[in-house]
Amino acid sequence: MAAKLFLKKNEDRRIRSGHLWIFSNEVQSLQGEAENGDLVEIYDSQNGFLGTGFYNKNSLISCRLLSGSAIEDFHWLIKERILNALKLRREFYPGEESFRLVFSESDFLPGLIIDKYNSTFVLQVYSCGMEKNIQTVAEVLKTELNAESIFTKNEKSFRRMEGLPEEDSIYLGSVEPCIISVGSIKYKIDFEKGHKTGFYFDQRDNRFFVEKISKGKSVIDAFCNSGGFGMHAAKAGASSVKFIDSSSFAIELAKQNCLMNDIRGNTEFVVSQVYEYFESLLSEKQQFDVVMIDPPAFAKKFKDLPAAKKGYEKLNRLALQLINGNGFLVTSSCSHHVTKEDFIQIVTDAARKADKKIQLIHFNGASLDHPELPAMIETSYLKFCVFRVV
Image 1 (cartoon, rainbow, N blue to C red):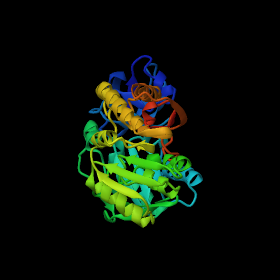
Image 2: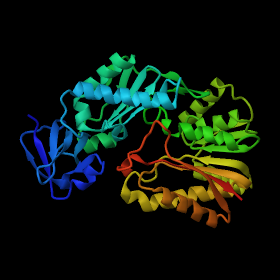
Image 3: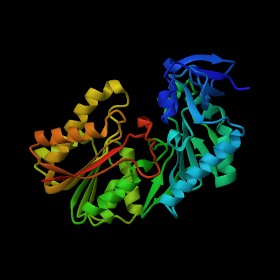
Image 4: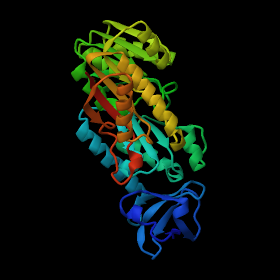
């Protein structure tokens, strides 16, 4: 029989509204024995049943809700949730074989991320419960989705928070590079050297949007990584595209991707810190029609927020100063702690300091394979903005 976790008075309100995390300071008591990663039954302070979740006494998140009812067949539940997530992606991206298959809590599989690269499945496991049952996940991927390779590419900091070992694991096949197609663009994926699981699927829909504003334009793709934004601009008929990244590996990958996609026109590849390179372009009085900036998260923790806001403002100010009249700023933030309102205000302040007038043309979040739970603000993180610079 599963142990029972009782919440303090009124701490059930957030759970009843649809949030899936129970924090350690919300727990009143545990009745029975439970090891980290075990399933426990969850009750409010009045003994009202709330659901079943993964328990971890060593984590700030003491319990992650998995179901609003008792779980009779765990394997069946995992299979149903993964296949349901696949069905949703098939509706959004018919004919595609590479996408984010499972987005953790947003797909009701707390602490589990699965990115699908053709028949290769790359996992990130951030809950003790999922770690304990990872062989079940691997079995479903193998038998139901014909997986040929399954392995993890975890972020160590998240593993530490759950008290999990930091090394990665291979559950099937091997870790080999592959080539994927995302719409009309092909990408080489290097799982060993690439960031995250190998590719940023969260910007896939937004990359297509830049085609609307790139024809005949001079374009900068800063923090270009594998070159996705710049390649879409080039495919749309940009007059020139300058790819900038501080990583020589990223620039080499962008070059290879351009060649693979037959993009051989007016392109330039620059290994440089973006801030410094923008300042050098300004000193040379160079101007561009479209400047796209997609930096890494500046605020991974709440305490980083003040410094992150200053960093985003400076970066966007420099970008705005490089843009011709009636050009476009395409700017993103993947910092969860920076809200949509915060980010738009940051760019507004940057425009004022750059003596530019701006119009917000388009706003979006992450791509459709990254659903959000309205009751969990933690599942919303990406801000993608397109501003017309007057």
